[in-house]
Length: 316
Image (cartoon, rainbow, N blue to C red; front, top):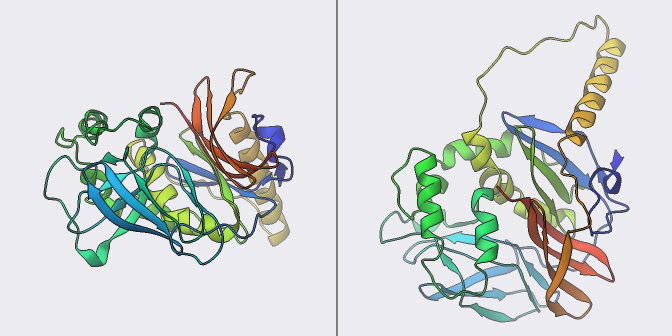
């Protein structure tokens, strides 16, 4: 493994976090991250619940755990039955048992129809193409504010130009979920670097491996899988290894993995001094901040200066 702070210098203190062997599925490359865990944070699927949709652009989330703070993931959204599908513009911190109403949510379904059955309800993270705009719109109470960007995204994918994100997330779900099986979630993995083609797409960091495992599908299939699906390269025949023994094959694999990691390192963005953090809210010693910089945006949660959660992505 390679120390992450040597690969991606940012305002975050990433000492102790390490990048593993890159995995590639078509246009999507994922580099697993391992590092120190912060126990006690409520994971999004098992503890965080969408309590109700109050109205267009208004949703209530609840931390249903008896103890532990919940970090609401950045740009979390829900596909659900009998209610408009929504996504949040920002992350949040919820104490145990706390219910919080978000009045600046984005409606990602511009009209009735396109609903899934109740048994198929699930959550997603906004595609990376929409994330910078959604973050800019946080705090603005306008349920239709993301519809123009969703329409443009649909048009780019050859779909009807409407503010219906389910045209991609639901109707292309069987294609997008292939990334979940083609990439392997590693034991103890609590984060990942994502690349589409040879371009940095995002850094995702969770408090622990259990939290990241619950985010895996939403990130791989939807946050980054959508852009990778669009950029999917033409299939080519794989070049076989020339080793004639097990030892030789292992040596070739080791050289290949080292070369891939070196190649991926050249794709990382050059992060200069203009990148900064602005605190948005706090809960006990946890600090939720917005990160902005040249070509980068996102939000992070720190505790005593060390990152607990991060979702940082490239402005596309």
